[in-house]
Length: 316
Ligand SMILES: Nc1ncnc2c1ncn2[C@@H]1O[C@H](COP(=O)(O)OP(=O)(O)OP(=O)(O)O)[C@@H](O)[C@H]1O
Ligand SMILES: O=P(O)(O)OC[C@@]1(O)O[C@H](CO)[C@@H](O)[C@@H]1O
Image (cartoon, rainbow, N blue to C red; front, side, top):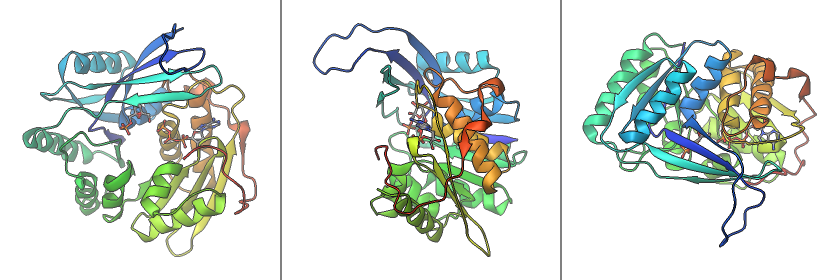
């Protein structure tokens, strides 16, 4: 069972527009509301593909009740923790070419008592878990080292932790020796403190995150694919891509990648291939809909030679 922890979940509203033009009234096309938050999405992707999972979800206000309703409709097994602050709403403006512009609210602070209750719920549920996924931003006021503390606590119990976050929370988590981190290109560059403009930069930065404490680094690179750097006695580096004919929304693609990678055993080329296939399928979905088995096409995955001078196309 894969337990996910999302301290800052969200309601994700995706609005399809023809073109984003500042300072104008834009007549929207289709709109959809999805449950959101990085750990929530990992559980959604796992559930959609029949992999046992449970999501720890703090929720508050009408927005939080709506989030729980949406997750219940999807059949997610949840540990719901009521909190006083309202669950945040994040907006995605999606253009026809797949470009998305995202506006994420900061979320509302968790009180120390609420954080304690959440940590206790996680620790209680972690006993039945093969992995704990601590994923997403931290709400205001939550200590930056919260993921690091959870990593250390789970390590004592022999439970592996995967962390997908950014900035100081990621750097603090690295020092706790997580089994796996899943930064995107921007998060990788920031944590490593180096620019990442080529594939070689990405591999070197991933190596640096391993030196900072991560055992395995799965670095997603947007349309350029992903790099996996792993290995105990002997380091192994894999680079893969998966083309998407018609990108619709990249929101949640990294979460789907992490879910697919974990579902396939979280090591080696085959697990990277599965993560790439789930991510590519997610990009072809509207909003942050997670791919189901019939959406996932493994024949699009490629493992080109990892040319260190390959310039990375996507932003970050
Ligand atoms: N435009 C694209 N075309 C093809 N594949 C893509 C595209 N964008 C993303 N992907 C796939 O999704 C993976 C994750 O994308 P990205 O690096 O943007 O992660 P992320 O920022 O963590 O995503 P999110 O936070 O929205 O879940 C990429 O490694 C790639 O496999
Ligand atoms: O603000 P965070 O926690 O970094 O990211 C939140 C978020 O953008 O991540 C998911 C996509 O990965 C969305 O469901 C959600 O809106």
